[in-house]
Length: 347
Image (cartoon, rainbow, N blue to C red; front, side, top):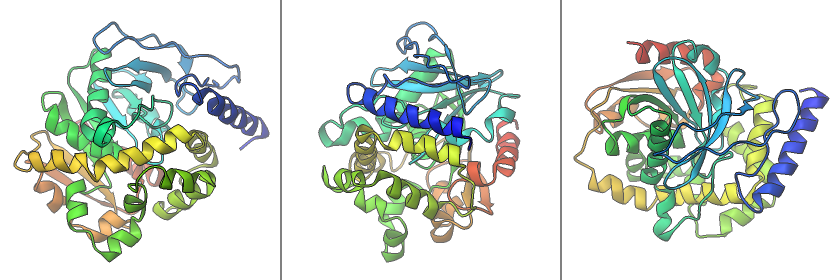
């Protein structure tokens, strides 16, 4: 990483932290030229196409925009031409996690890489009663409304980690919208909780740490966010160097915001409460869209679960396989991941 880039990231972190004290979407984005450019805000989910203004540093050829949904303003990077493809990241990443594979995806698709509500530069609403505002139902609705605002009523979607859990709920609640779905390195949330044992709790300790009542996890992580972030990513990634220094710096910029850390805790709290209620209510409902699962053979999901079996309990058309990596195929094995995605999505 060059000294100039270090200065840019440091400035972005400082500006973002200061802006987020008043509103999480007022941080400025620094395009490749280094000049500070404020974002235009998107129109409502039922209104006209949002304005595009700012280049995406990590995704050349993409533009950044904020799109207003009924529940939150969502940051998106948009690029390419062709059928619509929505990409949803996990924790603790942002839409930047897709940057290794988006150049080729844009040759085939109009790619929309979004920050989930609470993450990255998307809005961070309060959790609400019973953490309802971070239910996967609410987070999925955000993204469906984002796509509708861009003119896409039906689309393919790829989700990783938390984003894949949002996609799972999306495919149940919005079956007419989801053409195909790809889930990266997850088994169903309810299944993972139901089968919890000592090994799972040890490997995925944050599933039980982050759900503790406010503000214990927020305060503990706040003592050294960089340490927690680095240890978390380092424990999940099994390919050294897969998360580049620049990508880590971008994730850290967002993680330094206390509102982001609180939103992340609310996401996990929702998963252990209201999401399980929603899943129980839909226990007999199956996903109709073709579902393709990829997971890391070196990771916890691949080690503890028969991943295809868990998804065949939830969907009618399931395929997929393990990959030689840890938790983040799109960062660890980008060329192979790209090949698998294109093979499924273009078929």
